[in-house]
Image 1 (cartoon, rainbow, N blue to C red):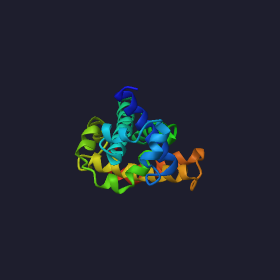
Image 2: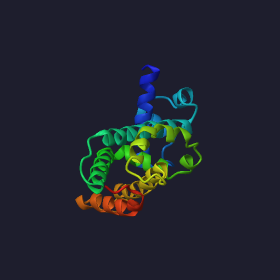
Image 3: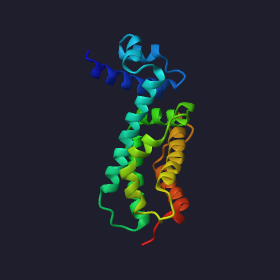
Length: 191
């Protein structure tokens, strides 16, 4: 297996192991058993387990940033609340259709590994989406703060759904969307 291919296999194995066992249960042995390779490759390719976890988070965060950016590029022609609901619904469904991936994101996002990361690269990753978001916000509102606040609420809720602590009923998405919109309402430009 070539290095690029092995790198992808290790990342996908990491997603699967972390989604099932959590970060503490994601040992190099468990990841490599899933990937059907020797543990030495984690160190040769990534430098160590924490770097593998960080690389995996960056990949998944990039997928989410691309989803948000793509969704914000679609024509929005309703009221501010209707447009917000369209964007929120699309991103929510994107997340819920990728449960193992979002379980990894949620677990990493709420870990000390994430808390200790520099966030400049992440802000750069979301730059185009943030620019589009700022179009809907009052000038004094910080789109980066808004996005991270939404992440906190959505990741907490989805985390509870994945763990089975909250029901994944059809109305959950709409309830969270309404709560987020009404809390953010003072920041939103009104037509």
